[in-house]
Length: 261
Image (tube, rainbow, N blue to C red; front, top):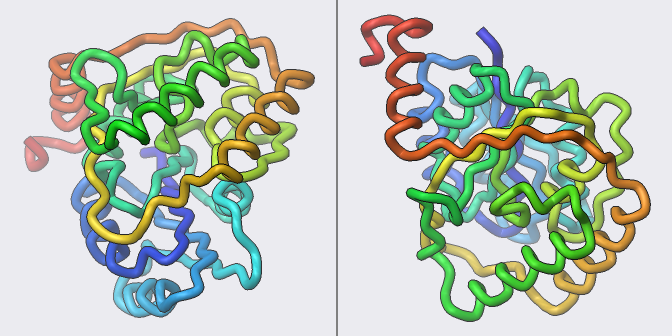
């Protein structure tokens, strides 16, 4: 059975950590996994993580001093990860941890990438207010205009995805700012992508990190990638909610046994 590493970059998310770890544990029950927190916090988030680590061997922490940036934090997490599959998700609980099992099952069907999407049938971006929906739409369109490699992907600016670890071997990753998935989509060699629907949730605690600087870095990142993106021939399949349920049930029956019905 393949293992999964879940990379979670954190910045002042102390109220969400225990909830997130519990949700990931439930989602990946029966799967070998680890949770790698790469933390840039100025509050007691690392103390919360260390407290959990005392009783949970799945959890790992790397705390960075005087350094910030989601993309560079995820890149460090990639280097620390031991799993066959590497997932990335936010710590603010807007990405539902329950989708991780669906993502794992999609990878087990032979996908190189699994990308949950708010924008396909069964998906929902209701966790965004009108202003953030506008920002998200603008970022998506800017990315697709500058980078043709993003055009087949319905939701390329999300921070929620999983890929085969081997895709990172010799990949020319130069992340800046807060968007890591476009970097990985543009700079790695892959063929098969599965998109699955998910509902983006409202933030439970903490504050959004989006600001003008983040958007400027994103545009700069897209322009830099334009000069070096890999031209992959993609097959993109989009699972409906019923397809997800069917594939999950099949996997549980065939691979995990009747106890996971």
